[in-house]
Length: 190
Length: 190
Image (tube, rainbow over all chains, first blue to last red; front, side, top):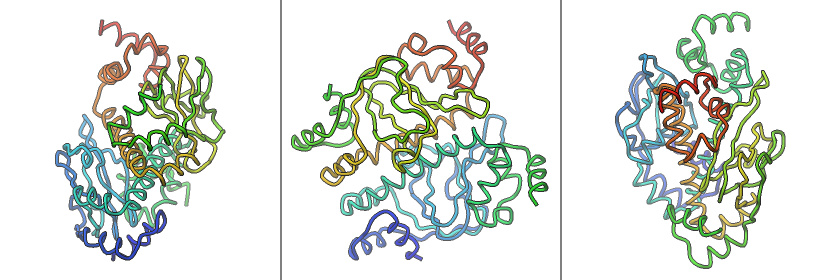
């Protein structure tokens, strides 16, 4: 279970045996059933979650009551509401499991303690945060240059078995297109 | 000149005298005239720029040839194209001075050296990057909940003397509204 997290960190930094032990002592395993909430709008997000198995969506409800999906998260992704986590403020987004989902969770106070004792962990999170920022900026940039069909193809390449794992109306919400138009794209693709 | 950068870092971390000396030895002052480019689309972004004086815009050109402004940057902001900076890839965005602009510039190789010798600098950039990510997410979240008028008011509160510093068509581009609609908002506001 924790092996996947260790391998993940190795992409960024090396950690000694004692650092890995300390890290694993500070992490909790949590399991969520399909449709359970990891975080509900209005609550403070107290954890960073590393997805070991499963799939989540992060979304917010707009003024018209529509649920707008900001991102999906799969295995080997960190998910959190960073604004709420950093500033200990109520989250504007909700995070919901779309499959039975296992996560490793680090609480904020623990993580800040760990940054003091494992400088390479702080380096890893500096780099992970940069990559998250890049991913969001790329999404905006790509969306400006790509057709809906290309955006759908990009998502298919990022999430294995996408259409079996995520309901079509949620994929449409993420792509900011109608479900009808998504069906048309899928029909022409096959 | 460097005082403002030192004060900026003090918001996040403390730095010793020798660390400050080392940091300042690694930084270059650059001056750009109004309309000069700090970065052009297609080039690799080799620096992080700290704005000491002036105003910039970061924008990209869409498939129809329109310039879409992602953000404005003013005094005490870091600006860069992070994707290009981290991955040493051609930038999709351009960064242009909208006023005569003075920046302090740290090159990528220098910064990575500094992370090794000043762990608190890496901590500061971990936190700065988190705040940038939060700012982008807030922009998306706020835009979903706010009317165009509220979005304009938010921008006015962020950039002092906005309408004297930034041409109206650029403000409209940033807000994703037409210049005509922006004029109407401004008329009703005054």
